[in-house]
Structure formats: C-alpha cells, structure tokens
Image (cartoon, rainbow, N blue to C red; front, side, top):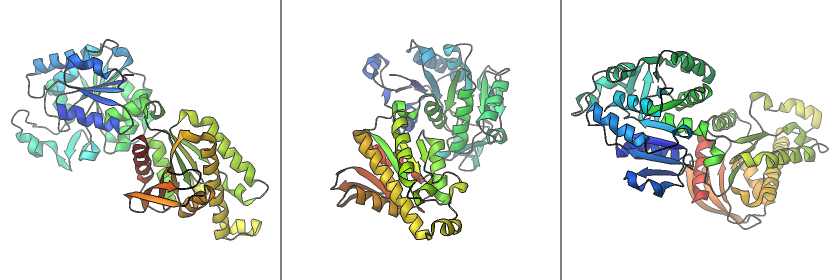
Length: 431
C-alpha cells in the first residue's frame, strides 16, 4: 500500500532517495512514465523525476504540481520534495509548488544536510566536506551556479513565502525542543529551514516534526525523508524480511550498551533486559528465564527485531566483589551462568516462535558457543565477514540446521555495529 511519494528534480536523485528508504525494508519503485503508475500498486514508496533542475522556475513549478496531482488521496500520503544536495536547481519554485498543491495548511521543512555524503548545515551554512557551499565547484555550475552558502538565503531568493530558521543548538536539545520550535516558527512561516550535523540530529528533527502534528512536506536530499518515514510507518509494518531477527547479547561492556541504545534510536526493536543477578540463584534462575522468554513471545507481534540483553544502563553491571561474598562464585563462574541463561532464553524463544525467527545475532563468544551447544549444532558454514570479528554464518546440523546467524565478540566494533549486523542479517534472510 502506497505510503510515501518522492518528487525529485532528476532521475538519479529520485533513485538515490528511494534507495535510502529501501534500506529500511520498504518496497520502492521509480516511475519513468506517469502512464505506467498502475504497475506500482503494491509499492510502499513511489519516486518520480520531473527532470526540472535546468528548467525555468515557472516550468519547474508546473512539473512538480502535475507530479503531485497524479495522486488523488494526498491527505493519506507523506510527500517529499527531493532537492539537490548542493541546492542547485529551482529549489524555491518547487517548494512553492508542492506547498500550494498539497494545500494551504502545508508547511515545508527544509533539512539540507546529507551527512553520509559530507553535507552538513551548521549556523545556516551548508558545508560540503567542511567547505562552504559557495567555495565548491557548484559555484561554477553552468546551469545552476550557487553564490551563497546560507540555506535560508538561497530559499528566500527563490520562494515567495517567508522562511523561518531553527539552529543546530536548538536541534541538539532533542525532539521536544524541536517540536516546540517548529510550532513556533510555523506561526509566521510557510517554510522552515533546520540545521543538522549528524544522522542522529536528523532523526530527532523527524520525531519533533511528526510530534508537532503539523501537515508538512520534507524538503531534503533524502536522509530526512527516510527518517520521517521510519517514524510515520513503523518498521514492523514495512519490513519484508522472511522472519524476525533475534539478538542474544551477553556482554556487559560500555560498548555493548552503546550498541543496544543506538539500535533503539535507529530502529524499532523490542528490548527485554534480563535481571542477571537471578541467574546466580538456583531457585530463581528458571523463573527469570521463563519471564524473559514469555515477555518476548507475548510482545513479538509488534516488532521485527527482538533483543534479549543483560545490560542497558551502567547500573545493570554486576558488582562481582559483592557477588563473591553472597554466592561464593568468582567472576568466571558468574559469567558462565549468565551466558548459559541467555543462550537458553534464545533457544526457547526460537523453539516457541518457530518460523517467525529468520535469523539470530549473538554477541559474546560464550553466548554463541552455549547457544550452539543447546541446539546441537555441528558447526558453521562461514559465509562472510560483516565487519572484522562479526561473522555471517549458517548453522550446520542440529535442530536449527541452515539458520542464518551473525556471531560477534562483545568488545567488537563501534556504537553502530549492532545496527550494521542486524541490517546485514535482514538483507540475507529476505533474499
């Protein structure tokens, strides 16, 4: 079912933005001939190129208007006006067109940043790999030369509407402040330009804009559009993977907590934290294992990523000196009991959910080994290296023969590694 429409001023821009949304599991199509729109009935996202970057502003206005009017039920769709990452073309005229076509109550949110391509907006200045826009090659562009680095200035010169601005220092305060800033700026402006330096900034902007409940259109090179789509259409509704990803995480390092929390900020996982101290008490261990398993099984229907972990916050880390006095276990014995319990939980969840689980991610060598022992695996068919020391395999033998699995050391990678591994695993099981 169609959810998002992307109108770009050239074909490569349309495809580029579409590809970003496709990475989130959406079914994305690019229409080459508007007469063929009926061929794309089952797509989540449709991209259309107006090829209007080099046109006169009035012509570009009509092209965008005609593209938007291809869709009758506009109120039910999220629209994006994809702009060039260096602000070339008829940015202002096309913003005016999409605003007026979608209705007078529409606000245009301009987020010119594209961090993965080195484009960031700080202090209203668009920097390309650290260089102000006006000092780059686009200043000499034969059809759309850029003479200013200020995003608001470029938009104001081309649009007939007033332009508001939200600075990076406000963005860094998070979605609630952004929401309030957007609502305030929208009182006097039809267009709002917002700074962003990182992907996390853009995610916060997306959340704040959606929380504002304003009707808005995304004006950006693609990253902001994808972030809004993730907020509007929760990942579990659009992921086409052949099964869920189950993550068993036994490491209690600071890096592991960063990875779990980054996954939470970027995706929509179900995260269930085990009360690890109870794994050390033979009278409480089985009860806690069953609690975690049952919570995952009861809630899984709303999520495509299921995470069982021993730690989310620093306070979750056990004090082994105190444990030694209470339970008479040393650090190694405690770790063995905890990893065995996590492996048991992962095994039981798969046993209960069956084919709903398409792949497994385990963090911590002991968890991986204990899990494979419990499922009676003979070994791994090693397929690929996701990142160094995070390996994609297929299980050989045992009750889950052939299951896709990523194994990773507990102290491996950076904060983004868990997201990278989950995305990789989803790609493998969906194909």
